[in-house]
Length: 361
Ligand code: MRU
Image 1 (cartoon, rainbow, N blue to C red):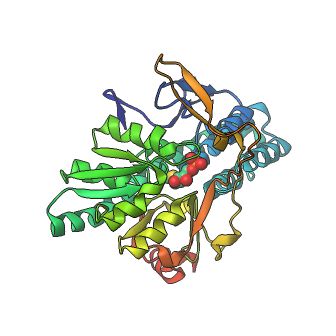
Image 2 (tube, rainbow, N blue to C red):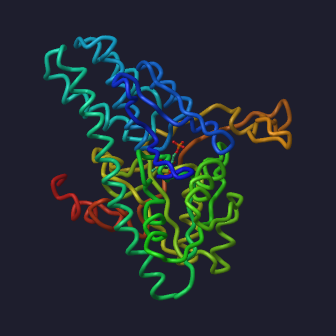
């Protein structure tokens, strides 16, 4: 995607061919800074501390993390150590496991001296594929937005939660890809952006992406969506996913479930956009997905820019108050209108998914 006329991806191999560049997403929207990852430990820290986040980008960073780790030690033990470290970085997005397993299966069968070069090409291929899959999701989702526009002949109001834009993937995004495609197709749009407490990925990242792309949007407090739906001011919800079960349950940023409930009550279509790398074919019950619990501090404090331009961290609760910070929730398949994948839109069910991915049957 373009920032001030320059094309960016969220992760890249640096010109030295040995290190990896990322955008430090903890600084957005106030500062645009890139960071160079020099080691597997840097990749683990970037994932854990959320300099990179979003399921597909976590997977892509892990793939590059394997490449960085093998430059330090390409033996069997080195490969095992780096994979184990990366797998422990964050628990919920299945793309992390998917990417590490893909790297491991390609690399384990090679002699150690061939592993670094092979890891470089596999990580690069995984990233290229991510871009293509997300662009295809954009095309599939565009059909849904077009249908709404042809019926209503007015700007289409889409509600999204968290950030499932290009910053959450290598490029394009998942939930935002159809929106970028619709903009390019000339369909008038307006996006309701949930701020997404506690880390505010909506306010910090989605609003920043949409502003950079010139897409009309309004930031809303997380609890506004239900009321807007009752007022008929939401035509479509599109969110991303961190892990989708083989039966169509969807785990995404905390608060997604409440939006799906409100959408069902108001008959607003609720779509989830995801690449197949986000499907956990081994799970059928969404409640079995490990839900990340993050630091209390993220709920007790907010980060933002003060009027003097400085970035400040401000406590919003009494000193003695404790917080609970569950980062994701599970939306049962029955509340999901459809899954937008790279191969098409399907019902959120085992049958729906197997129609698009028969090889998993
Ligand atoms: O905690 P985060 O910021 O990694 O959570 C991200 C989300 O919940 C996204 O909606 C999800 O990963 C889909 S990204 C294309």
